Length: 167
Ligand SMILES: [Zn+2]
Image 1: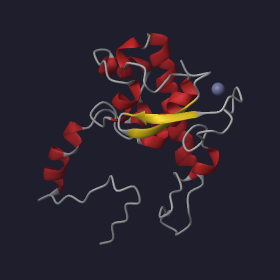
Image 2 (image 1 turned 135 degrees about the vertical axis):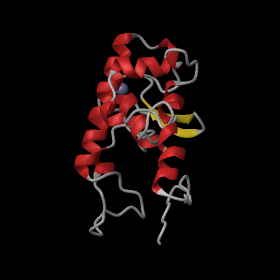
Image 3 (image 1 turned 30 degrees about the horizontal axis):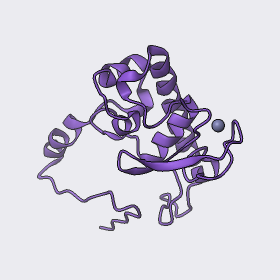
């Protein structure tokens, strides 16, 4: 078995059987991010005073969003990553859910994000990083308003956003 983890956030777990794995892993995961809507998202966030980015990264709230896609989804929806989750209106939640689906859909179309060691099963590298709107663009002009993007640590992770068009 080969295990390559360029960001060192992964892990290898041993389970006794597929049923054991399902029971221990899947039962703790939130709904699939690719299928989320505003109502379902709101139901999982309404009571949370955590930063919206922290909530999005919590796999028990939503399964399938990592650091990069959280930044991309928040940029697309115009929501600041450090805004308290409980502060989002129904419209914000609907827009965020739509932007999460768009972000993940485009990433899947493009074959995932390219990290140094990331390879598709055929050995080629993914191309999504060429199209990042927020992630890794600190100091570069925002693609919407041209103000330089800013970056800070939110939810323990490097986070990039536009101070001008994300509120
Ligand atoms: Zn902007």
